[in-house]
Length: 252
Image 1 (cartoon, rainbow, N blue to C red):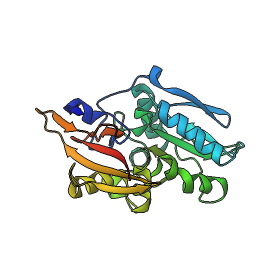
Image 2 (cartoon, rainbow, N blue to C red):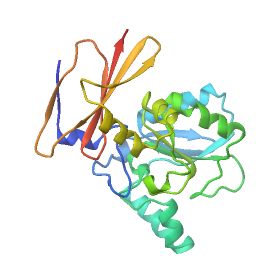
Image 3 (spheres, one colour):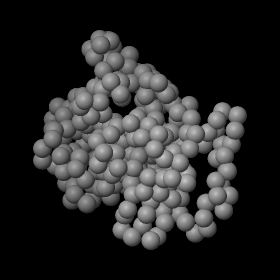
Image 4 (spheres, rainbow, N blue to C red):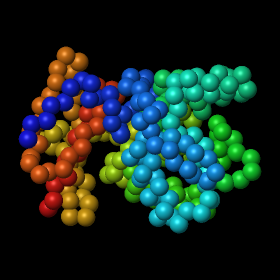
C-alpha cells in the first residue's frame, strides 16, 4: 500500500515538538477539542488524549484525588497567561514556567496540567507531589501514552524549568520508550533521527507484536511515498521540525 507524506504532514500529530525553537504552525480549533471533567474543573483536550486520560484515571479507581488545572488553550488565552505572569511574577519567572504564545504545548490540546485536590491551587505552578495518588498517576502514565514533559536536569534541552504537574500525550509505545530511556521529547526525536530509518527501525516488543519505529526527514519542496505492507496497522506523526515518525505494528 502506497502512503504519501507531504511537508504539511510534518506539522501535525501526537509527537509534534513545540518549544522555543519550534512554534506551533498548525493551530487546532477549539471546536475540535473534547471536554473532560477532572475533579471539579472542566478542561478541553484533544479527543484521543481525553479518552485515554479518562481510562488512565479509571484504572486508578479515581475518586477526586486530583483536579485539572489547564488543558487546551487558544492563542488569546496563552497571551493572557503570559502577560498576567509577567505583571505578577516578572519576566525571569515567566520565562522559566510559561511558554511564549505560539510556543506552548497547551495550544496543541495534547498537554494537561494537574494538581493535588486542595483548597488553594496555584494555576501556574500547581502542587503535584511525588507521593500518594499523584505519584501513582505519574508512574502509570507512560502505559497510557502520557509522559512527564519537563523533568529535572533537562532544562537546557527543553527551555522550561521542572514541571511535575505537566503531562503530555505522545501515544503508546513512544511514552514507554521515552520513560525507559529517561529522555525528553526533544531527545527522543533526535535519538530516532540519528539511529533509525524506514528499513532499519527501532523495535519495541509488546504482547506478541513488534512495533517498528523510524524517523524520516521530509525536505521542504518534496513529498515522500512509503510502501506500507497490507494489513499492517500503522501511525504517522509529524515532529514539527521537518520530519515524521512512522510506527508499524507487526504481529510476530
